[in-house]
Length: 218
Image (tube, rainbow, N blue to C red; front, side, top):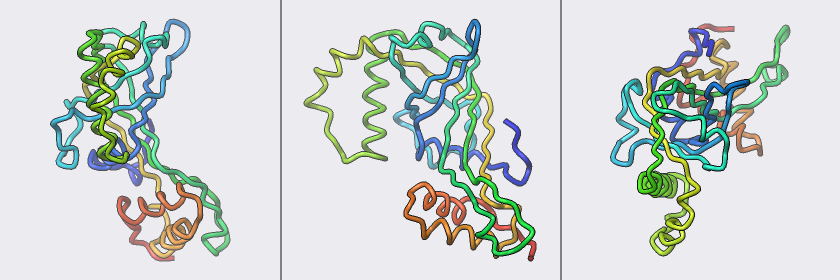
């Protein structure tokens, strides 16, 4: 992914995106065209993502439907990319309140490059499903107790294809109006914060907590 220097971000931002937006797009080469599958991805169950300094050499886990033809193409040490798309929103030039100006799109995304390690064993797949439920209930859910449903998990796990993903490199891009003067960025962030659209409010939060403010004036 091409990332202009002004939009480059550290691995801490990549970790944040993976935790907040864990539905990834898995991309691998296919015989005629690339395979692409949306699937949930988690950090190892015993890890503390908030303390991760570098993702390189780290591990992620994911799973997909074994009925998906993509599963049959996965093999040990296969090169792959996981794309995590965060909040994004259109920026109308009207928000700048100046002329000339041009509209743009603010967004946050991270591309994690690495290698696939399929986990075909039934027990491994069950572990990944359990870890995924535990991670998502803690971060995104309502504290649901999977205990009474473990027998059901055991019945459906044969349809799950789990994998381990070792990270080689990461490209993270937070395009959040960093090229604009601080007062202009404040206008954009305030505009999004007042929006009834959830994604726009998320972009506003990112602008105020993740991306550095420009130092130039208007």
